[in-house]
Length: 251
Picture 1 (cartoon, rainbow, N blue to C red):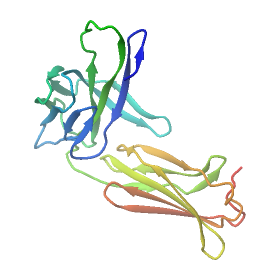
Picture 2: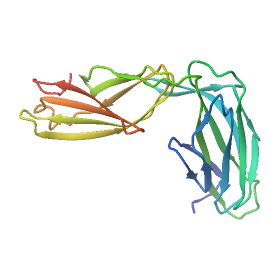
Picture 3: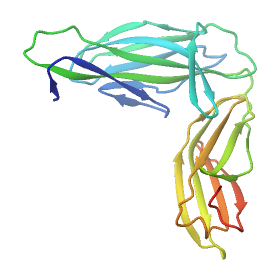
Picture 4: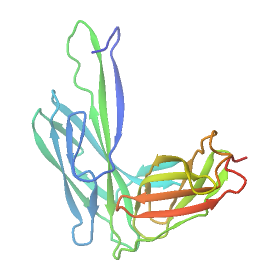
């Protein structure tokens, strides 16, 4: 336990993007992605307090977009309603949030994030103050299109000062989740010189995401071929090669 002369409260941001069940600071959440469809426009989010103390949470929902370079963009919305917006969970208690879409389902998927932000507990008399880390968790909410279309394109692989880069363009009408991006470098004759991997993220419908992976300085002069592989959360792998007869040290 950290002890300081004055009470401070820190805020921890947790962004959950897998499937199934997750835990954040004793808060058990299921599921960690929500799909609302024309046949099921309402859903439940189950919360269980597995921490050592009672906790209170404020619940908000935001419209979610992605910038290809800077990342997540959030804004206010009334497209999806959630109830309750404030709840208390005693130790070991389980409660549910109700979510529902109040907009018509259209030709393109719409995306949102529901945030659960732990509220500070009432101050208790104590001789010394402590630092309490509060949890803020973001859960993706997808409002499905009437008809699903999955499609994507990769740009040409290029070399620059930051390394090798390409754009993943989502030409479908539902989100694409990139799991990992891997860059491999090969010498003349085909021997592998290096392999580096970067974490992926969402590419929303109609959007794009630029991935850059650095080429090791000790290998760049020897590289004669680069291959960047994009792996999705559905185990699909797409590759883009680039021949580099003069090396891959960039500019």
